[in-house]
Length: 236
Ligand code: NI
Ligand code: MN
Image 1 (cartoon, rainbow, N blue to C red):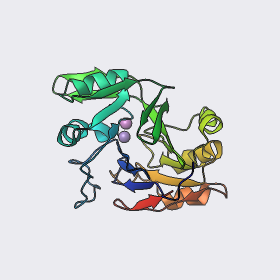
Image 2 (cartoon, helix red, strand yellow):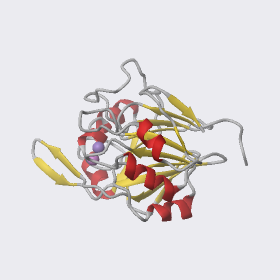
Image 3 (tube, rainbow, N blue to C red):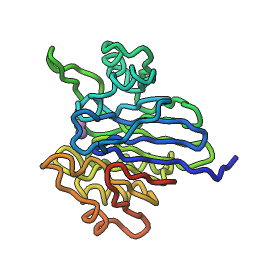
Image 4 (cartoon, protein in one colour):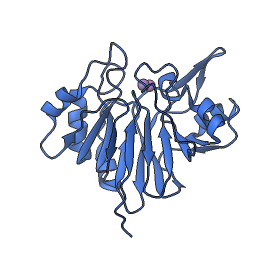
């Protein structure tokens, strides 16, 4: 079945993204709100949030997961050990999956895929092992296939993500220092072959110097780089 309604992707600064599907499924990836200098100030999250997806345990990806989950009555999806850690922060419903697994949320099939990055959760008691870093492929029923890479360098198995899932929209980190920079992201685009790249994880902090303009100058023709600002939406 196909539908004419679109999926809306809203960038909330850094790696925080809200995805709203044609059937009204709302997914929030990597909520970093209170201490995110680029979070659009007046943005209000929808009251109905079906799931929060976490890519890894660093604070700039999950520091607002528990508060938002509690306020909105939302389940948190993460790799097993991170889901356990989040449950320990008082979140009632968590889904602890692992790489290669898929969970269905409304009209979205959410698959946890590989990423190359560290992952540890830091709090007043120290640093905790919370599994490895991940990305997500989100296949919308009758709609696009989206890929959120999380924090990662470029890696050869992005080819597998293309072969298996064929995402048309890729949310890629481009800031550099902690993740891919534009040169690596352009190479990633060659492996993933998306139609559209939505650059994330740039411009938030001084070391994240990569820009969409730099990426656009490096990607092969065929992939469109969207130069968006926090608060902007993209429809696919
Ligand atoms: Ni990180
Ligand atoms: Mn990060």
